[in-house]
Amino acid sequence: MTDEQSVRRVSEWDRDRLRTLANAHDTPLYVQDLERVRENCERLTAAFPDADVRYAMKAHSGRAVLETVHAAGLDAECASAGEVDRALAAGFGGDRLHYTAVNPPARDLEYVVDAAASTDGLTVTAGAVDTLDRLADRGYDGRLCLRVNPGVGAGHHEKVRTGAAAKFGVPHDRAVRVARDAVDRFDLVGIHAHAGSGIDADGLDSHRELVSRMGALARELTEPEAAAGDPDASPDPLNLEYVDVGGGFGVPYREDDAPLELDAVADATRDALGEVPGVALAVEPGRYVVADAGVLLTRVNTVKPTPDETVVGVDAGMTDLLRPAMYDAYHPIRNIGGANNEPDPADRESTPVTVAGPICETGDTFCRTRPLARPVRGDLLAVGIAGAYGYEMASQYNSRPRPAEVALNGDATVVRRRERLADLTRVEREAEPSRDGDGGPAPIDGDAGGVSR
Image (cartoon, rainbow, N blue to C red; front, side, top):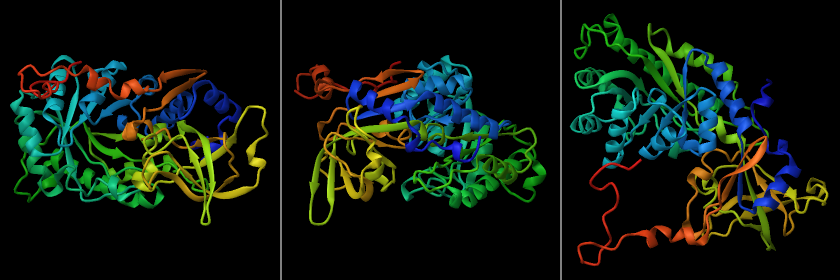
């Protein structure tokens, strides 16, 4: 596969099929191509043949995607109890589940501890001594991975650069002592760090530095001679199974950006880690697996010329795709026209437009003054590279129902129905009346116990 084939551009989606799907299922509509998900999984496992490849579920946790990833042989990396629950439902066994806790709520810990007791092999990753204490207080003594803050971050936006943010991981200079103390209470199987999300070629130096620091830490823990002179060191080596260096491998959102050379990234990762005898490498890609497998379809409903710009109003907004408003992220947009018998709008004159959604926020735009085949009311726009953090970050803000999602796997199947207006108030209508007579709300599920499976 060539470098260009390693990313699916929005121009490569079948125009007629997308228009047929929009006509059949209305808009806004997410379309996720499961064959592309499989191809991306295969590319990752080929580049990292000796590593444990774990899918970061926060990129897209839909059942159809998870079942595809599971069948492709990837493990699941879960950031919440809800993601653990989804992974179990999709068929992942405990030995392929990794729960990475970041300031975990009590109900999450209780759920995961219960799940670990009934699901052999589940691994909990913790990044604070407080979290270790909370796990021990709940009787957990199973498989543990220690998250470390290596002081090196990278990623497409400051809000997703985790490697140097104090929120994530035990400080690097305390990691040896915390790891050795943890051995007395848990089955310590690995160490973990993650630079950030959406790492491109410019961020690879930071990724390599993070991997290098984690390799050195692994040697210090597993090879006593590597820790000579360290007052926190012990003559007894620790038996680690793996060093997890995170994921964050980026994809090219802009049409003229080149894709990552994944084989070169894999080689650089192994070189930076160095030799750690008996210890495997683990990686956690999320975006790379699903981003270019998805598009968001939205319909033009308003074209408004103004003295400064032409505003093209569409029926999707920041509630459907938050990334442009949240991160000022670029997503490619293609005008694929209206009814099936219309000519390709690519033949129309290109004009700069601002594509804006229906949300009562100035930031609710997908692009500003971007050249686009001149839109008219009724045109269908395809927003590309939308498979990662698209539906996953969708909300009901402004009391807007979330969109439908269709999965392509030969045929097209609705895997998430479009929410209805009644869905917006369902949890309010289903809330139990107060039992204590004070007129207040009923207790929330999980306040005094675990999350129900």
